[in-house]
Image (cartoon, rainbow, N blue to C red; front, side, top):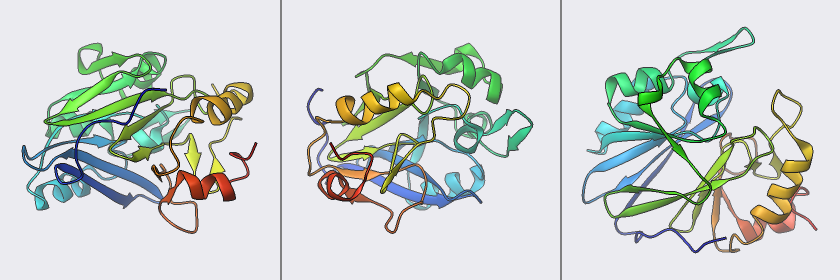
Length: 222
């Protein structure tokens, strides 16, 4: 796996927002000097997300999607509907939606966004926000196109990895074998110093180092 994403902590803007009735975390990541940021998984309450960015004098310039489930991107699937999400956000703050190529078609079905709204990515692509470089890591298992975001010693993991847990593999598109490979191989090179920031507040703490998780998370033990 490639090296750490660029961007010093003095330049990096990084904010974790608890939001919605399913204990989601939404993230704002960007460049403090340029006053620009992207939003990771903007479901439930677009007003709250936009106001949080505005309060920090940041302009939202795009969206990063960890995976296409409605509790992370809004929209509907299998009769389950979540307000807010990718569509309403880019209506308020125009920008591209960055998604793994394996997840893009599902995202369009669930949220109604168009192909012209999307940038389809491969594993280890980067998204630049000012001087901040965010590395996109393809981590299938929870869904075929799940991805994590690595930036300046922080790993935003969506529903791939939680504090002392991991994402479900019994939903449509879930794959236990791929999840095992993701946890045991694809994420194995993430340094111990990196801090894990999950997609849900399911643990005793909202974040933890990978070293701590390798000691306590049963899904990371070898």
